[in-house]
Length: 128
Image (cartoon, rainbow, N blue to C red):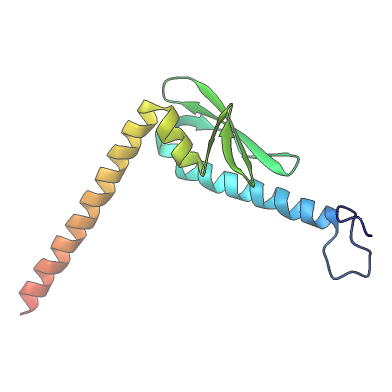
C-alpha cells in the first residue's frame, strides 16, 4: 500500500509537496497583506506579512497602543488563543477602538451612498 503523505512521483499529475507548500505560503502572504490593508483605517500601524511555514504573520499596533501578532493559515486568522475567519472579525472582537473606527467608517460610506442616490434621484427628476 502506498504512503499518502509521500511526495508525488515526478511523472505524477499531482503537484509535489514543495509546490503545494509554495502555493499555500504565497496564498497566505497575499491574503494577509490584503486583509491588513483593509483595516489600516482602524489601527495605528501594521507590518507587511512575512512567511511562517505555510502561514503568514503580520503585526498590528492597535489604537490603544497594544501590539497584536496576526497569523493566517488555512484555519483562519489567529492572535494568541483567539481564532477568527478574517482580520476584520478578529479586530472587531479584540479592540473596542477598532470597532468604533469601523462603525465611523461604515457610517461615512453609507452616508456617501445615500448622497449619491439622492443626487441621482435629483438629476432624474430634473430630466423629467
